[in-house]
Length: 167
Image (tube, rainbow, N blue to C red; front, top):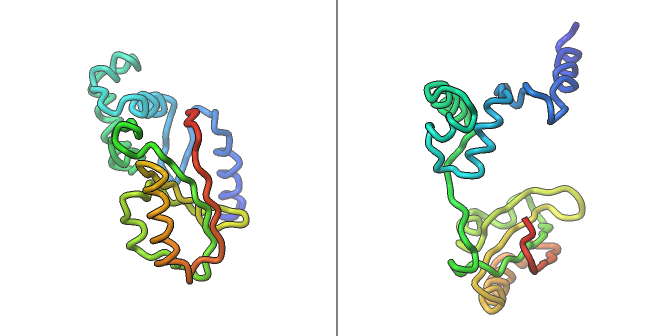
């Protein structure tokens, strides 16, 4: 069996997301790891003792598994979920953008506080940008500055205002 056949065999072997033991970028995540990750996604402050009780595994085993997941980069950071309305970011806009060059927005754009997320996408646009504002007026000001600063580098934008967060 040559390298290409072996690689294809691994791709087929690991494509079902419901399998108990799968490999992703050379990191093995078994069912027990998946349970720990699911619990931490629900509550990133969950203690090792709580995770141990919920999984039925000894605390030392849970601790070892969490440390392994952190070391392998599966767990990147522990974070919180804010109530966007209460912190003045309840007005969410999704903007799809197509540009004229590879780096048409520049590093400064990614550091703006209103920019919550930027994803490269397929289709008729290059980027999907999640923006958060306090209100429509804040968005209008941002959009004017955006057009002024990046307009010559942008081919097309489409903005969509989120009317409800369903999940």
